[in-house]
Length: 300
Image (spheres, rainbow, N blue to C red):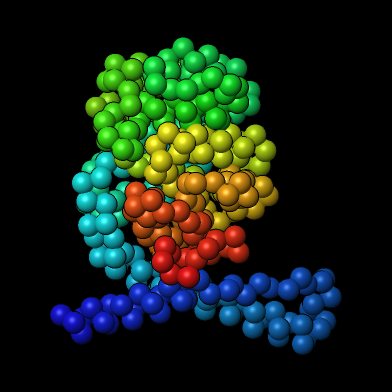
């Protein structure tokens, strides 16, 4: 057993090393390339190296994915965890994170899918009155005029347990009224009978959009965390570019945790471990980009 665990550990370490390796980027080529044999040879070599790296990355993802369930086993035992996915979230990313949550022994608190309209500037004037009219009594909506901040506060209150007492912050009726109204108006989607109060919330996004959608998402995730206290905002690598949501949250030095690179198996594992760290009172920014603290919690 010890030898098997050692081999698995070495395999995971090697896989993570490859997974986090730098990608070779082909140089810009001119139209005269065909007449310049050295440049043609260099281009051929770079293309070949990129294919090798892609194969290595795919292989490392498979290794990491195979041992991922063991790495997160029991980390969230008996903890109700809710997933909130954005419209651009990749289905494969969401499903992989769900499977890891099962392996972590977390209690499934459901999934709420945000539609495009939830983060669009054109529909914020329709969303704001719904949030204000159906906000649970304990939601502190005073002085919250931005849709992102208000939606985080309102949904955070409706969907969360009190971090100290673990009692639901909203009644069943308050939660149902809010969710039904938002779904009826096309702002969210979910399956009836699947949503329960959560101790932690994982927000899964995709590549993100510049401008208002990113600002609204960053404010929403921060607002959720202000209420829930254990929120992880995750997204693909491009979410850290062009002042998108992950970049904004990291610039703000927020209390929630962030994970970039969820297109890779190792960072999906990081999402689960970051959730555990949040519940234990910690915080961090994880992933493969320069704004991340490390690839995984506790792995600087």
